[in-house]
Image (cartoon, rainbow, N blue to C red; front, side, top):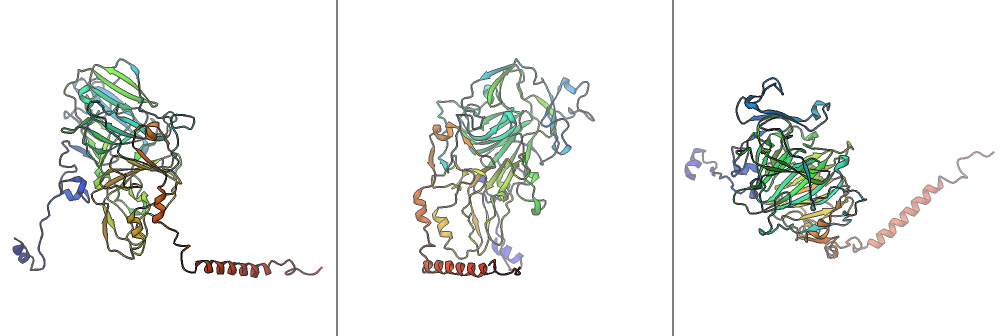
Length: 520
């Protein structure tokens, strides 16, 4: 076969057949899968595509009213219900709402009942004694997943780690880890976050997520964003026994695509790669359901005699969505110097300061490193932002060899940090290397925020996996003071002092008050 191909091409080269990759965690980019669909092989659902659209979907064709939103009578006896995300009079670019056409309105319920929420903390103000600083660097080994003997769904397995601000004042951020071994839908349980937008990032275990607007399938290396006020249920996908991942919540802001500036119209997370569900109705509608709502950081439960997943049609732009991080189109320096991590921003959430975001969600995955005559790794730094890193799979980019998938790493704002690994030290000795592929078969995410994080008791010790605070003193052995050991450095410094003193005396001459004045 090779000979025929060689002959067919004039004897210049042999065409080598390309076989698609099958493991998304081992690809250099999503395109290695050679998929003609925008989803991975095991994703059972269809999606709508495109960031920023006003999508529409219907289970039964012709259900959506034409030319209006609220007709006197909907087809099939459906009720019109709207969900608004923004103020009614918000500018068009910031106006978000969705019209729903459902079997029963959400208002048909028996009221709110307070529920315990021991794992949730949303007041991250200095006056709250239950949260505290971690002023130094910190690292966690994988957060524990409850044993099968302790059934835990998304609601009970959601633990707050840290945050800043308070949902009551509509400003701030919270970080969570979720660990679960049980599904919500079989128990007719739904979740609704009335405080802010959730960004879920799967680390272990596939999730089958049901929302009011349809179904999504989430795998490690994918993210799912659900807006405040939207109901959803998190289930373990078929064959999964447990799952773990991370959640970032923003208050008073929303997740957006970052501006590209000089990059141009394409790059980073491209709009067409964001996937939105299509309408799907529950097979059993007249069944008792519980809807657990997070309101001002506390849980309240709604009981109702019908499924919350009864939308036959909808149209609008308040729709949950997902994104595959292996599709990220990375940008980088191709000449000199390490590029700031902001070049890896997937989504950003604005703050009240127009020049400083509340939060950035960043990707660190496989890419080419091609800079020349420069130290390619991150330089030692004291960034103004708080940084929480988590490895989804592979080796990750943590502070030590203990940084494993399912754990976390943290550096607070202006906390000095950088690499102490052998690879970092060896990089100093490399004069020049050719192009290289880095971070292969691994993916790390980072939540970067301009806010100072306060940490819950669970994060500070209750989880049992916080293993490191501060810098290992032995790290300095890898980074000795080479300056002081430089041959003749003391003589050179003495000469510098002498030169400066001589220069000072030369300049002082011109400031002598006896010169430059006329005698009276």
